[in-house]
Image (cartoon, rainbow, N blue to C red; front, side, top):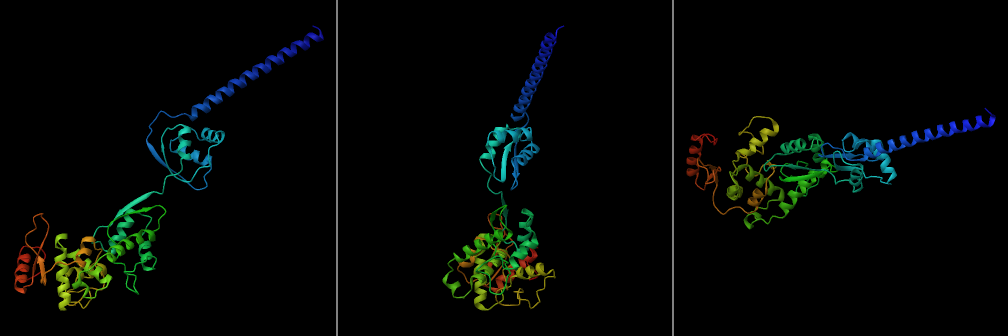
Length: 356
């Protein structure tokens, strides 16, 4: 074979080889592109909604890993490439809700709409709760708010209230019982300030009756009276009568005789109830109001403290009969003899009225 023939044959082999390599490359590229496109499509599994939190400073690749781990997208690498090719991003940090097994485009659309607002948690404080109970309830609902943090925010003066007497940080009774909402961005002080502000608005919004005003009670003392009403009233309908008995006894200089104040002190100190003590909480012996509220009064108790019923009653005691709705009720009287008879009946019925 001539030199020219050998050269021609070599060129044909090179051409065939290059052509074959190109064909393999094209097949590979097409296969890779097919795989890439398949990874961007929606999956066939559950489309249950999941929440994904994107930390501040996350790159598109970081977000892709989060979405893949949550089964939102099929492949993190393919998603990252797609986001770059389409010019998507950067994306906002925060909370997002995605459907599982979404397409890459659907996930990018969700990211492009921006993060959801801060997560909201509600907590409920029942009427009559003591401060220790309120602290525990808040912590149980929002574990990141420890009882120690709550106590510290109150004791260190982080929470403000014009109702608080000068020189004290005892917030007993000054956090209004209601349902509250806090976001993940709120601090423990923010949560407590909501409650203190709610009580301040309600107390300062009261217009007390003229005969109550003549007693010269401060707003804080009105809250104390309301806390006693809250503890003593068998039902809200009786609250104005309970308040009237308290005011009648205050005006007469008589001890209030409310055992709930001594029980409050016992709970707070861990000591047995002592009705012979000289403590200001022993309203069997000491005239006047106790030093602090004994719980968080609700609106009905505050209203009763501002607008007591009209009457000359000096005593009340648990009745042996409930009202028409099956709620506990009391006998109210201005007669010591009638009170003694009603108390004996209560004691004999085992309703916890003490010895007659």
